[in-house]
Figure 1: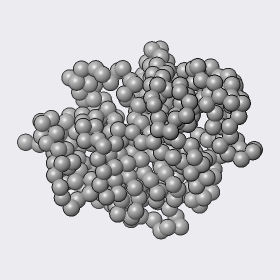
Figure 2: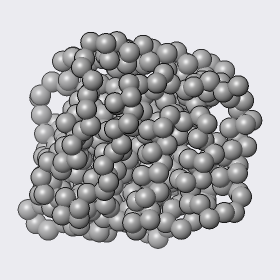
Figure 3: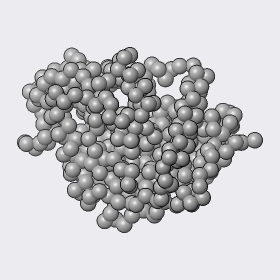
Figure 4: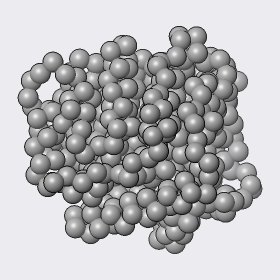
Length: 412
């Protein structure tokens, strides 16, 4: 018998259905939006905020950069046999039918997913029907989907990674990032035990918050500024982030961080886990033969977009052993964005939609019509605003001018 995955909420909150998609003039419209770590099926998933966010956006391309489903959390809450879960996924990806990908996932996982999480799948399907192309990249929490890659259907694609060409010509690789993380290779039983502990802790913390805070009503669907202005503000804020990267401003280490994130921060700083992960990622990408690559040993991509760590970030990393011309700009003179240089690569992490420290969650990476990259965040009030990722001691690295273009770059 299948257990109920979550304790039922009050009727008023459960019946607060998300509003329909906004009028065109109120939508955040852009060439591409990158989201990651939705963790549908987990207590960590911020499904209410995610439903509102998906109702506010209308990109040409929506890339889900890993951990869309949390199959380990589903196994914990529903008490289902892993084989039953595998069979359900097999039916979604192998049996022909009139349903699109997300409608199939909702049908097969309905018995194990909370209603709000099912509505997220429906909202993703609705975006496909409205003309948004959706790319799903599996992560470590839904790694079993990788056996079906590559696969595509009307309006959606399932693939290991995505090589995206931005409007300004930059090539950006979207990859979850767990492949270069040695910790995720732990024994499956130990991983499941850690997930169970985290889900239990999160459920307890959520219960305490509901007791100590008044019941929240439906969030308004508001974009913090007109779509074009918001994109401009986000790009400008993130561009300034590059110039401030080498300043003496101390990294954020306290200021109300959650106990769970404080423990994670101490582990990453003490063990150097964050640095090793990025170093392995850059080394792997540098050895990869990319399409149309001209020079051997030179990175075939200009930027990488990752998830996995749940920490939004924008950093330019120096490439070891790579020499480039003095300057090969990808934008006009006077641009504050980093140049397209062979000596470094831009690293972005688009954050997560899994409950955590409130100033870090509900973020997304956005691409403007001119190719500018920005980051936005959905505030607790429901507004989407421009966002600048904070820095922490564990992801602040020695900075020096890039040999090719002078932009301040880090060495992990």
